Structures are given as structure tokens and as C-alpha cells.
Length: 91
Image (cartoon, rainbow, N blue to C red; front, side, top):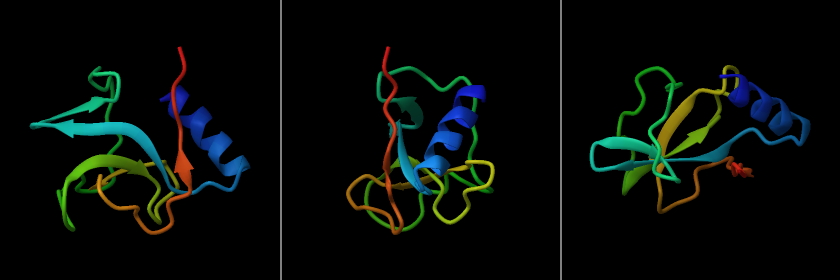
């Protein structure tokens, strides 16, 4: 959670409100782009809900609900309204 808070502070500093986080659904399991399972979940409300078209297998932060940096599932094949960018983790 500390890492997520640091990313969100950085996002706000750059005016980024909605962004990809590299979490994707593979089968029935959500995994980071490096194949690791998340160590915590931060879904918004009833997410992931698989709503609203296409390949709903990617996760974003924000989507009109930035406080708390909650996650929302979305289509991997289209850019959600308000998307400003993405964050990548470097080792």
C-alpha cells in the first residue's frame, strides 16, 4: 500500500488522474504484467465486475474516483475516458 500511495502522489503531482497499472486478468486470476499475483487488492466498490464491453481484463486506477486510488477493471482493447497514462515498475 505504501508503494501505491507513493505512485498516487506522483500521479497527482503531474496532473494524472486515471492510469493503467499493469494488472491483467488471465483466465480467472488477476496477475501483474510480470506474472506475479498481487499481494493486496484495492478494487473500487463491486469491482472487478466485468462490465462494459470487450476484453475486460485490464485494471486502471482512477476513472472518476481518484481518492483512495481504487482499481477498476476495463477493456484492454480501448482507452477508457480520461485515461492520462500508465506507471511501470522498474527493478
